Image (cartoon, rainbow, N blue to C red):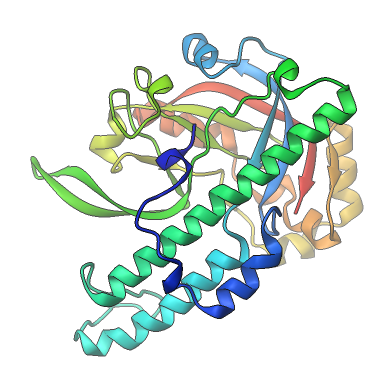
Length: 314
């Protein structure tokens, strides 16, 4: 139930720097900072009963767990390492960019191939990371409820990546061509029939998650054909920030955020005060509006809305 079946091919650990290995080794099995979280949620609305049932969601009030994290400092270092490589390669390939914030190398160059292999290694780290956290989450539920994970029916709905570049086939000017699709702050939303989707979902489409703020909820969507025409098989990955982290720190206190969430019946646990304040719900766009845009465009349609009960920030 994972994108790429939980393991992307052609990863090469030999393309990973010692610094990335050093950063990644102690962090495996951890959530991380920023907007990463583990959230215990309640199903608030079901919009597509057939798709929800296929995913194991049968009624409103059902409990789910959403885990949002990735490749930690390991993936971050891989990106930093290859940004430096690409900066050095610009003059070699006589590439002129319109903005210093941009970086690129030719797709089939040695630098391009090396980056892809390193990035794929980081993706495999991310799937391993989420799998470990999922395992420990199940064990925590087993311990508290004194039931097995099978009794609790804690099955994985889907595990999807959202910072990734892949070579895919898409129609360009009416012709099917291989292109590199970068999904940064975006997630794949393939429609039914695509062989990349696990067999369980192939006749309905790929599950998609849009995490919102820790006070408003998240959405499960279903990939639709419109995504192939409009957005290279993609939709938004999340609600997105409306306020910078520094602005959130200036405008809110930890006590205010905890009280606001507590008044809604949401329990929060975080390692740092900044983690609570920076992720205040007011710093994010309206996740319902984001889901509605995707739904109305036919990129990915609404299946269920999930609202938080408890939030753990990394």
